[in-house]
Amino acid sequence: MPARLQQHLQQLSEELSGDTPLDTEDRAALLELMQQIDLKLARELAGDPDASLVDGVNLAVESFESQHPTLTGTLRNILQSLANMGI
Image (tube, rainbow, N blue to C red):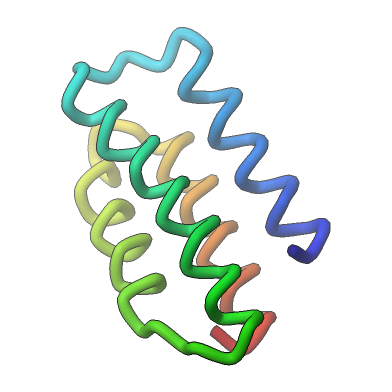
């Protein structure tokens, strides 16, 4: 996994572990998204592309955009890293 993407995922993890005001359902959804990114990225790198990876991150951006701008910024950084990888 590229270092930049790893850094963004670590930042998201830290934000979720901190005092970010999220309800249990939203926090669980973001944690699941992080797991999906890890799994699907491994498949992408193995040559089995999955278009839903970027779609899932885009949905999370739309969902958290108005109430959680810091998380949204981190998710957008993840999207940019994936785009830079050609995903």
